Length: 385
Image (cartoon, rainbow, N blue to C red; front, side):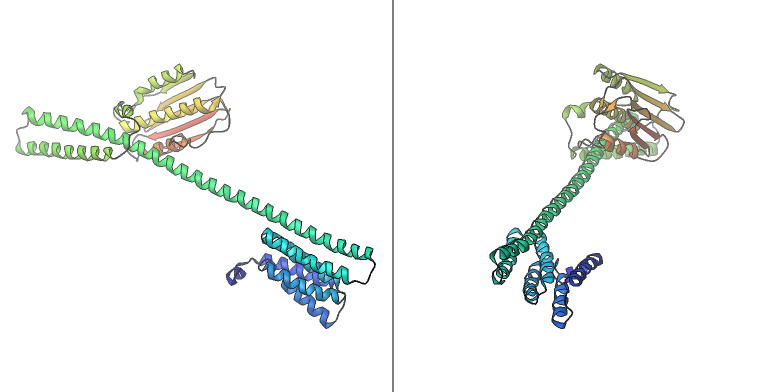
């Protein structure tokens, strides 16, 4: 660890190590004389940097411990050595930690041999000094394993979060592409009608003014150019299936057929319509298609995720300036509904469609159970048309 790590170390960590070093010095200082004070201050100062340079600090503390032990200050040698060894076992590799433990045992064996006591006392010294060191080593290795496991779990959670965000982004992008394909189909259809009607008008001979004839010709030319550009753009976008691209664009009138299909699949659906469209054409083809897709996705999710469903309601309410859509069931959720199934559908796709027309969407558990999806589409608001 370099100077940058020293500067970036939290103050709390410095304070904790300083307190521990001061405690070791105060408890182990049995003699008040210059040599003892010097050894105590050196040992305490080294312990401040035990997390930063564990190997050098461990070796230096061992040397000072031998000197302290020779000066009849065994407390300083034992306390400082145990803390340094524990830190080494936490931060170093297994090989380095074992080497530190063996080096620590060397001076213990040396002390036991040099002490002029009976063999039983030497064995007591050897075991008594070795057991705390072995315990400090084992606790350090356990803490390192625990910290690594927690770090792995945090990293795994972070990667899962990143993966989920990426999956959501891909799902939203896929749904936008699907909406764009459908809108391109709608625009191409309307432009084809404009071209056909304009050409028919130009050939009918009913236009006698040269300026009007020129305006119709310009309209045909611009509509053809726009149609070609639309088809060119549409051709660069991947299609889901050829058969899907040949299917007619669904609108509100297709909801009856959709509900019938779902009923035939075994889901009881009650379809309600309140009010009528204020005026013909108030809901554009794109808006009607989006409402259809919303109902289709909500019913599909009910069949996929809900259990013990006795009834499902689809309600379409027409108001002067807004169309309200409600799909709710009384089923029991197995594991909650995911915002996306990874295919560009689900709530992400619903929200993309509704927001593209300036609408709002709410989805979640119902007040009496089941699942509830509600949306409102402004008839004269902003958004894609």
